[in-house]
Image (cartoon, rainbow, N blue to C red):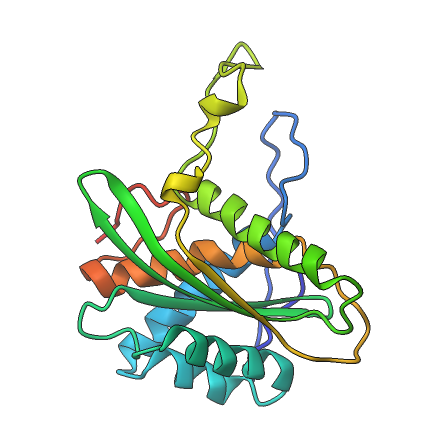
Length: 229
């Protein structure tokens, strides 16, 4: 993925290739799936360390990306963003993939049954929208797919073969535990962008930041099964 959209004066990038010896295919979201996670979680930690409100902290650093800043403002309005304070359980994340922008705010909690996401609000700018219904389906589907990844939907492998032979064994989110999803699209005449991966990569860090608001603990690993402090 590209560098984060924030106006950081000095940037150094180190690339360390690692050979795992295991064959791997492409995950939906590709490299953005983890770069969005550590960038947006780290920005949240920086805001907390600076005793700043997470949304305004990002807004100040997005002076060069007005489209992403607008998505943040719209998502905040949609979700009735309260600043992520006072154990509200609200968390936010934003990301850009090419010409596509998204900001996501979730309300989440953690109890004996695991991570529970209660609401998802998203503002999306994908330029000119050719088919609004399909665009909405792609973003909603991406958010739900990313929600499943964030809370550990997967399968075990034995001798290189998946243990679960049925889709139902993957622990993907079901309708019964899928929260209400609100999506607002920015009216734009820009170049159409792919909506299919934006939700996938942004929901994870939004949930992690929401869990910090709810619990005071940081979740720095995916899936979000164990806090680190």
